[in-house]
Image 1 (cartoon, rainbow, N blue to C red):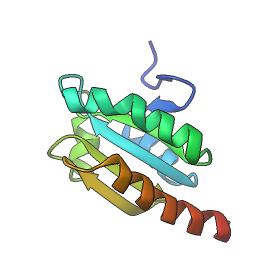
Image 2 (cartoon, rainbow, N blue to C red):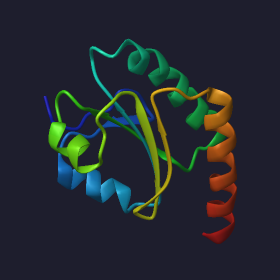
Image 3 (cartoon, one colour):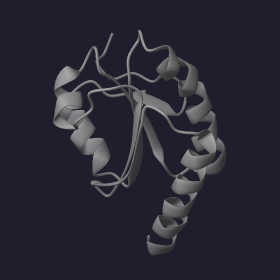
Image 4 (cartoon, one colour):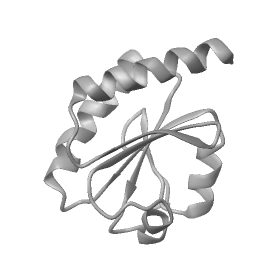
Length: 120
């Protein structure tokens, strides 16, 4: 089994720092930092996949398991779960941690997505 594999057609598992850095530089990337033992992380993962595939198709979607890749999580300052980060052209533009609503997530991504799409 490879280190990077597809969860579905839209969410990629990133497990190496190099692959994570590559993906961050490639346009827009929404990353869910989670863990196999985090019930909330596992519950929101399919909802985030659906949201991104339906409303924000140009955003790459990735998952980083902090239990499997602690070096990436430490480098990104992720010490609680779940955490969502949106990177655009390598720069962080959104970070939501622990408690957030999907309405908040959607409206904040939508604003950034529209700006990004108009400047491409």
